[in-house]
Every structure is written in C-alpha cells, then in structure tokens.
Length: 497
Image (cartoon, rainbow, N blue to C red; front, side, top):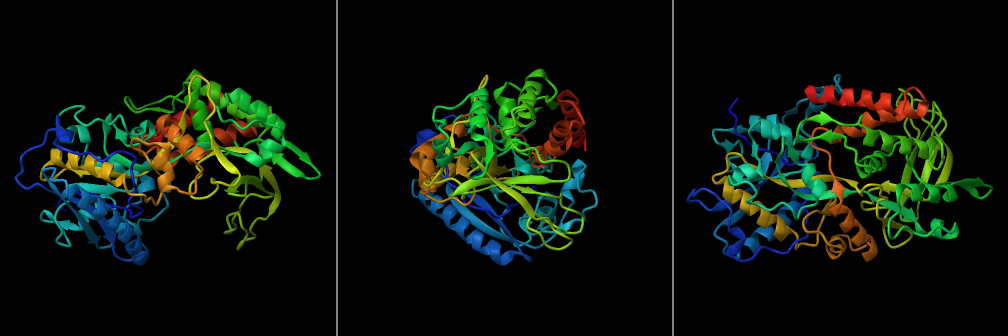
C-alpha cells in the first residue's frame, strides 16, 4: 500500500480563535520555508461517503463556509501566498479497532468509517501522490480528533510545527492556551495548532448559594474553603435533598485538585506516570475526604450509581437504586429491566464544562477554580490544524496555519468548544452570545491557567480513573497510595501497547 502521508477530518466545526489578524509582511520575519515556487497553500477538509454522509455534508458546508471566508480575507492581503480550501470526499473504509491498540475493547470489531478516516483508511484512499478523488495532496489538515495525532505523526502524515519551520521557536506558541498546547504535544513536539477546546470551570447555582447564605466565589476559593462552603450547602429536609458538590465520578474535579496541589498525572517529556508521587497522593486524599469524611458529595452504595445533570434552570444529582445490568438496561430504563431513579437532589456546585447548556444568564454561573499551591483546570482541544508532511513547502504551510488561525478568530462562529488563541472575555462572548460577560471573563481566565493531557492518554483517563482509582478508594478496597500505584501501572501498560 502506497504511503501518502495524509490526514483526516472528523467533520465537526470551523472554529474561531481569539486574536487580531496578522497584517503586513512583518508577521513572517524569522519564519523559514523553502522556495517551492508554487505559493498556493491547500487546506483539506475530508468528507467520507457512506453512513452519516448527509449529516456530515451539512456540517462540512458550515466548515467550508468559515474556512473559505477566512481564506478570502487572507488572499486579499497579498501576504505572498494564496490559500485554497478543498473539500475532499473519501470512499468509506474500515477503521481499525483503535481501542484494542491500548488494551481496551479487545472484542470490538473494526467498523466502517462513520466520520473521518484515520491514518490507515486515508492511506488506502490515496494513490500515486494524489487522493483517490483526484484532489491535490493538502498542505494543511483540519484535525478534529487530537487523540490520533501521535498515530498520524508516526505514520509520517503530519509534521510538527517546529520541524516544519526548521527553526526552533520561529513560531510563537505562547499566545495559545497552555493546556491546549499540552494536549497536542507528543514526544516534546507540537503536532497541531489547537483551534478550539472544551474547558472546565467551577459552576454554581446562584439561587442556592444566596438562599443558604454562601457568598459566590467570585475571587476564587481555596479547596479548604470550598469544602467549608460545601458543608453549609449539603443537607436533607422535608423540602428536599441538596449536595454541596459532585465528586465521586468527576475526573475534571480530581485533575484540578491534583494539578493545583503541584501533582502530575503524566510527564510528557520522559513518559513517566507520576500519580503515585506525594503531591498527587495529597490531592487524591482530599478528594476522598470530600466524599467519605466531610460528606459534601454523594457516594453511591454498592449496586447503585448516580450522575450529574445540568441545564440553565439548575443542577441535579440523580441516583438510581440498582446498577445497569447486561441486558441492555440504561439510565433511562428500557429493555432488559432498565433502572429507574430513586432520588433526585439539588446540586450547588460542580467542576464541569458548561458547553451549550447549563451555563448562561439565568442562575448557573462560572467561577474560578479553587487553589492550593496554584490554580489549574482541564482543557480538551476539539479541533486543530496540522502541517502535511509532504506539503510542497512545509515552512510556508506552518506560517499559513498561524495566519488562518488568526483570521478564523474574527468569525463569530463556533460549533464545539471555545477559542484558545489570545483569548479574552469579549471574544468568548462573541462566540457564545448567551453568556454573561462575567462568565465569559472567567472562562477566558481559566483558559490561561488550563492544563491538558497528552494525546492517547486523554480518551482513556475517565475510565482508568473510575475503575482503577475512584471506585477502589471509595469502596474501601484500596488505600489511596495503593490505588494510585495500580492506576499508574495500568496507565503505563496501556502506553506500552
């Protein structure tokens, strides 16, 4: 099979960035690219045929319109290159069982490509230096699954930005949200420019806090102060039950606590898992105490489960009186004797991503993350730009990626996530007009103290935390130290696959 070193797009959204448009030739000072003669930069948006194609065609139309508008603005500036956006239809192929590569879902069969092809599928769809559709090989690739970046890099399909420009530091990446950059780095190299991300903040119900006499955390709490507030906010009465926070299955909360206490999950530079170190252990113990000592968050008994739900009218914890069985039952009931809710309680605070719901002008608002040694929150990129390893001029492509990112910042559109470049509250509100400016400012600040998990780890961190650490600790089956060691081992084994 001929290797054509191309990438893919799981079509989700043309997303804006928060920055001023680069203007004038001075922007390119210090950037190095070869002289290919052809100064056209091709940006690829891949659209698969087959199942889901109609839905994706509609999404692709929105993406294409955003990219084309940005490209037109760039082309009008006479920056020394022209940008061309290509929508490439790729025949359906078989996605390999990606999870099995990392020790999960080993019984899953490869499935036909429902969204965009990953590396192997696209390679099969390419031939003789051009894609099977006859489209030119792209210089820039719009990526919508950051978790596959290492695979695309190992396959020789994309090229790191520093390598593309051949001058270390020739592209200033400091204006990007730090967590978003962490999440696209692998083996010490930035494999993409992140365009948009989800971001977790401390969200709270302003009506509940006011009625219980708790001052809203505008200036930020320490974790100890959050626990003390949680004690006042947690109770049960004839009027109903109320929890101070949600913690037993909240990976965003636990990650924020670990990072803010100076701990780490993974060292991307040397590949070491660091969950069993003292700083991380201290944070995990405080998380445990929130639930089993201070009891400000639910701890579902064995055989039951509880989850959080939210909308602009409030946040709730929904409890169920039996765990889902193997007969197809789910949280909402249904075949196989599905479970039914046994209790619903109000929820005062939660560390979560507001998304399109559950954060707005009514009563659910954002607040800064609590602190200890520092402040941190989890960010997850949902779209980015990568340089094609066989671009005509990889240096020029890298330059064009930065310009395109900045131009996209001027478009008040987004499909998933928030912009991550040079972010301000005004920019956040432009792409999410329903937000209060106060909430937009808090989200912008959170992006500046954000942390990220490297690709390959991020998609498995939720299940690993819950199965290897959270459940054993809360059930009393393992100490925090033992559970942290076990999860460290499981994570290290997964990375060896």
